[in-house]
Length: 125
Image (cartoon, rainbow, N blue to C red; front, side):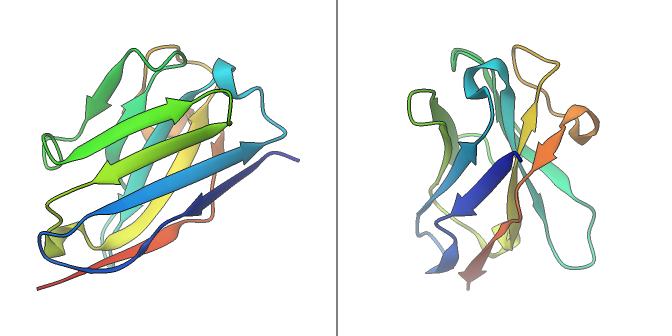
């Protein structure tokens, strides 16, 4: 059974940094576009960042551009989200997801086939 396991969340002050990791198992990892999404309390899940199969194509939500960086290591079956200059508005549960259909990233959650269980990120003001 495919598993995506996120880690690296926690509590950080405004302006701080966190690095999220998502380790995949039982998945042909290099054949999947990977994405990060987040969901804050009482809000819908929203796109954060995506990376294509080879890692050469990335895309970001406007709200995180210039602060977050997505990357992947296909040899380690892992995707990362480096988050800098964190703001209270970044507080959410962060999910990674795997999309088998798109090669060069995808900002829509609808084509993602597998999802992790999420990791909480809390940014205090």
